Length: 196
Image (cartoon, rainbow, N blue to C red; front, top):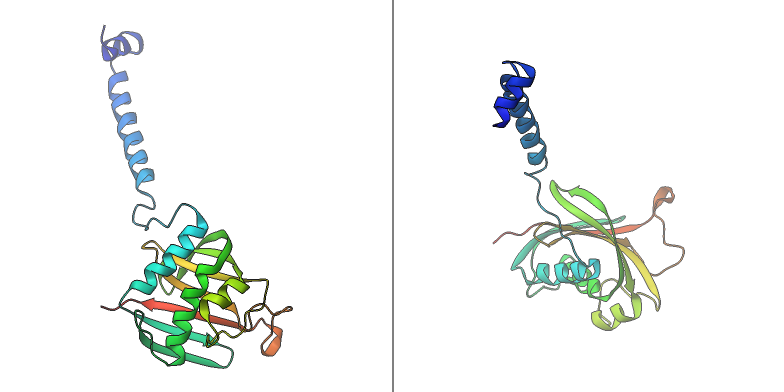
């Protein structure tokens, strides 16, 4: 005996209509729940160290980026040619923070956050200062990074492009320097957009 016939026999003629409505409601709710967040970009997953290093390399390969560099004393904003950075401070900082990320020795995902309207995943990165000094060279705008490790945060979007790097203005110094009012003195490098 078919399922609907068994229900009609057991519960009366209204059972199939009640089941039909219940099925439609369940399908509608399930469809809505399945679609929640469907419009959000899929953030990077996998080995965090590989994500950070790979994202820095992918960002450095882009032709250009609008970069904003902020520290307690200044604010720089310019379009930077990433493949061939110039000699302006904004160019040098953009190249330095991307290169520095290749010296990551430990990475912990911190959580999602929007940076200038773009969904990103934030990572807390431990950088091997000795390795970073060797990779960056003596003319690096970040200065001598010390000999052990220091912490930095990096935000990476769904396309695996670096959107923000934030570190102490004097990485590796303990305790970290402070700005007026006792707040940590931070250098923030934002990769705002990637114009063609």
